[in-house]
Amino acid sequence: MKTTRLVVVCIVLSLLCGGIGAWVVGSVYPNILAQSKVGDKVDPKSATKIVNLIEEERATIHVVDEVTPAVVSVIARKSRADVVKLYQDQSSPSDLVFSDPSLSEVEAKQMVDVSSGTGFFVAQDGLILTNRHVIDVPGALLFVVTNEGKELPAKLIDTDAVLDIALLRVEGTGYPVATLADSEQIRIGQTVIAIGNTLSEFRNTVTKGVVSGINRRVTAGFAVSGSEVIEKAIQTDAAINPGNSGGPLINLVGEVIGVNTAVSFDGQAVAFAIPINQVKRAIEDVKSIGHIARPWLGVHYVLVTGETATPKFAFGTKLVKGDAVADAAVSKGGPADVAGLKAGDVLIAVDGTAFAQGKALAELVTPHRAGDKIKIQYIRDGNLFDTIVTLGDAEQIQK
Image 1: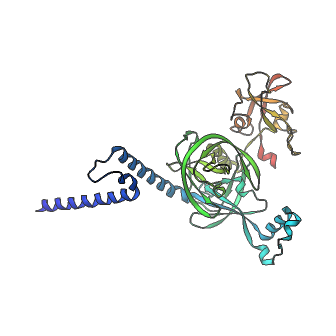
Image 2: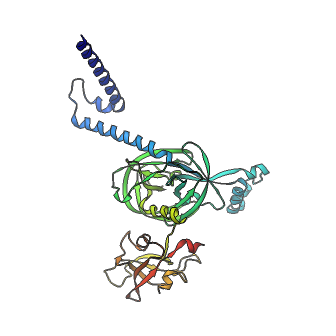
Image 3: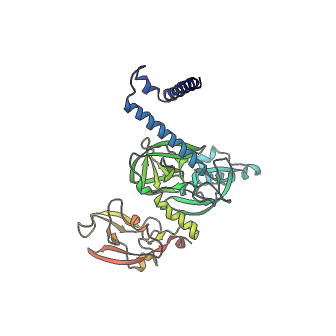
């Protein structure tokens, strides 16, 4: 009797489990099931597809749940009076005819959002990584909004215009931290997830796509800070907009592979991120010495081809004066000047590595630290020379 009851219970449970499983699969993937009839054998390939889709969906949900607490919205605010003054300074007289800049004392002191983006915690003590162009608003006060909706005042620690990154800090400890991946391991076609402050309004929106390309060289334009060149950028078709700037691009293991930075408005589903490996040292610098110790060579240059002495060197960087007064070809008293470099010199190699497409002066100097000695090969008046340059600290120059 007991055995009979046990058999009945097992049959009922099997029917229930089978019914629930069929309902789940049928609800999620009806198109696949619609292709088969009752009594047909399940196609192994279709079954594998279903399993893979379910597993990927579970992985996506899991990593989003894991990473989202570390993501914050970053906001720059100014008083309404400052915003009106800025508008007046930048507008033509005809524009001002249709505006009413008069404000009451209360209205003048009201704070308004002038820029916003995304960031994420990289240390439990409140250190946050974001894009420089998100917070590059002179005189603005900075705030972050956590995943729980808590607003916190933030302090700017340092920025790096070359990488378009900024590091902020909020008071407190024990914040959830995003795990950083090795971005050298990413592959074209792998699934990625972007989390960000979409349209500067919808916090921690999740989008999904693939890595469409790597090692892209992108010129990104920003309304406040002009344009910057992003080297070795990750291209993705995950939906990203300006509000996502500074947010994490993560893999299915929940690790950050890049910092979402730019969107192409010339084509759909084309966005770019800074590889996280380029950012790691800046984070470590801030943790250890309190600022980003970016190496400084003290030159202004343009990329050239066909101007080198021999066909062996197809790429070079020619030292030329820039448009701005401060953009001397060789900064007086700087590392390059001390090493004997002059305007018109064509640099062709660093430490024996010749320049190539996507691997020129900036890419070869950036991995070094201030105080490092590097050997630079250059061409002057058709002759090949080399010199040793002791790199300076860009932070000290700015001060």
